[in-house]
Structures are given as structure tokens and as C-alpha cells.
Image (cartoon, rainbow, N blue to C red; front, side, top):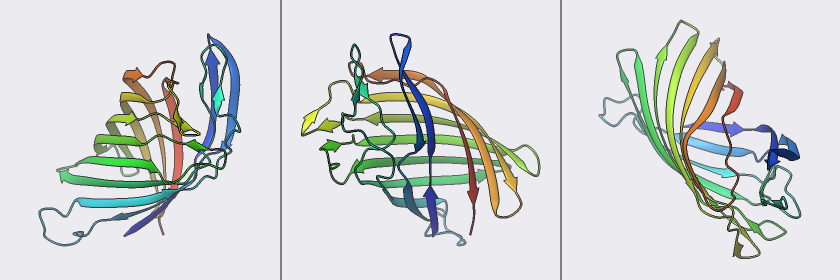
Length: 213
């Protein structure tokens, strides 16, 4: 079993009609998760099958009024203020020097925030192919599809939230010794379908560092 903790630091600026009206920066909601591969180390055809479950903590700053903007209002905040649960299944397989993987996940709210905000339920699918570039570096290409329902505030669904996004994400992974690795990737939306005036993020960059124990 693999235990993981994700501590995302976010810097983002919201624009309305081409003008920036709000910038958020800081720690977003922390995710604690466990990944279980029941057939690792056995000569089983499904040894690449894994299952995951986790909890998202409301550690990021939420807003008393998460709806931001006048002309085109939308939800924009570092954290949701609510606990959320995650569940997923994934499968990976090595072919020569290639590692192919696919996964399906769901994130669902477990409660409402203290001000009555309930984040959307979100469904994810991804497929990836990775290949070593050298002894220390690995290149990876990921296709992803996500669908989010609408957020709710005091039991009423926000009409301007929820979207479906199909994207591609090239990434570079640097293996630093046996315990550490660093990664950099860019998320490039290829197709987006949003409800009303929901926020539609353009291409954005991710960088990260991980440590194995």
C-alpha cells in the first residue's frame, strides 16, 4: 500500500471581460490518499490493477461569498470549506520501455461548508504513456476527460458552475536518487463545455516534488 499527501500551492487570477478582478494565492485543500495494488509481486495477469481512496481536507481559504464577479459571476476560491472523499481504480502495464496506464476517479462532497457551500461531484478519466529519456528523466503524455456537476450554495445549484473538459498534458519527470522526484507539466484544454458563465481555465503549468518513504 502506498500512502500519499498532496499539499497544493495555488496562484491564480480571475479575469472578467479581459480585466483581472481577483487574485488568489496560498495553500489549497490538502489531499490524503492511499493506493493499493493487491497483486504486486505476484505472477497475476491483473498485477497492474490498483485501487485508491482518500480524503480532501478543507485547508484552503474559502470565501464568505464564493460567487465572484458582477457581469459574469463565478465561483473562485482557494478551498471549498468542505470535506470531500475520493475513490478510484487504475491499471498499468509495461511494454518494452513504455509504461501505459489508465485511471478513473470520482471526487464527491461529504458535507457542506460552515457557510452552506457544497462543492460539485467531479468524475475523471485519464490515459497516459511514459518512456524514459535517460537514466534520470522520463517523458510522459496524458489525455484526460473530466466532468463536474454544479456547486451548491444553501441548497441551490449555481447555474454558472460545472463543466466538461478534454485535455492533453505533456510532462517531464526527474528522478532524484531513490527517494525524491520532481515533475513539471502543462495542462492544455482541447475541448471545453461549460455551464452558463462557469470559469474555464486556459493552459496552466504544474510543478511538484515528491518523496518516497
